[in-house]
Amino acid sequence: EERAACRARWRQHLEELRSRHLEEIKATATTMTELRMRTSTAEAEASGATGTLKDLTAQIENLEQMNAGLEAQVQDAVHVMEEIRRQMTSIKEVFTRKHHDLEQRQNSLRDEMQQTSGEMSSAQSALLRRVERAEDECASL
Image 1 (cartoon, rainbow, N blue to C red):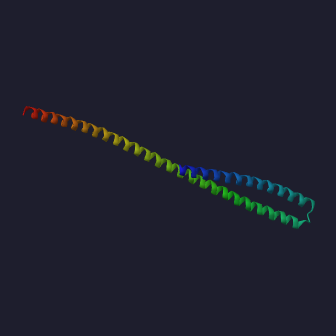
Image 2 (image 1 turned 30 degrees about the horizontal axis):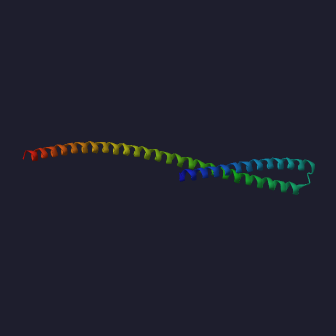
Image 3 (image 1 turned 30 degrees about the vertical axis):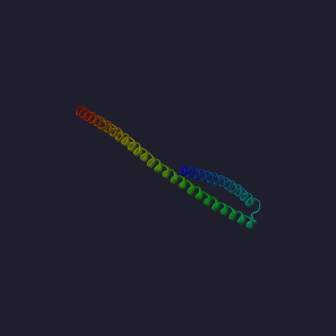
């Protein structure tokens, strides 16, 4: 239960991270598109505004770097989620195997109990016959 709760928290955390990063990537892409459009307009209207163009280009590059960083984080999160999935599968396989082993052990113990019960009944019957014979012998004396 604790592992399942931990996995659920991790899954939720990773999904929140993924969702947040995807929104940031979309926002970054939108911002990059807007900046590119502004850059084109600035070039057409004022070819002498080199400083502004350089600033916008630097901002675009910065946003592209941020976008690349966010994409890397999303990929890391995806890898973590895949690893968690693999571990969950492994845990499930171990659990299934252990459960099967326990069922077999339980069946084996049940069989042993039935056998022991049968042996005890036989021993009890034999003992009662001995007691009866002993009582008969005592009565005949």
